[in-house]
Image (tube, rainbow, N blue to C red; front, side, top):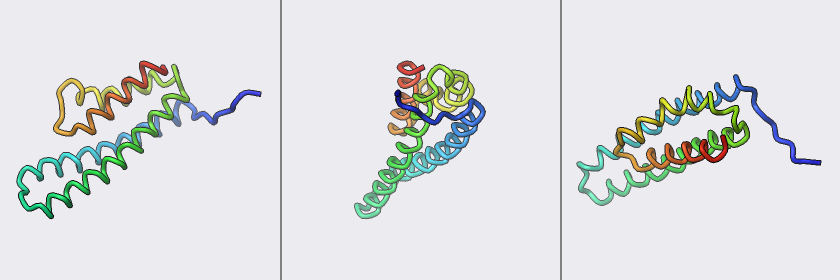
Length: 119
């Protein structure tokens, strides 16, 4: 008796990924705004508050990206069209054009590596 996993349909997996990407996009925006603002902050206490915000946002972002990664690993080859339709347009530019957010770049790299490994 093998291990059984609940799989989303292709449509459900696409919707799930698309919705997560919207939330990820908002998180990227918040992180980018914080990172940009930090270049003008010289007060140590205020800088610590910004760093705490960045850290909390990073943890949230990790969980969101992991959720996509788990979906990708369950779907395997069936995830390729979702990757091409949803992930590539959202994360490709981060890898090709750069970003001021190393966490965004790391998230993009993780999803691309997961796709190569599991799809």
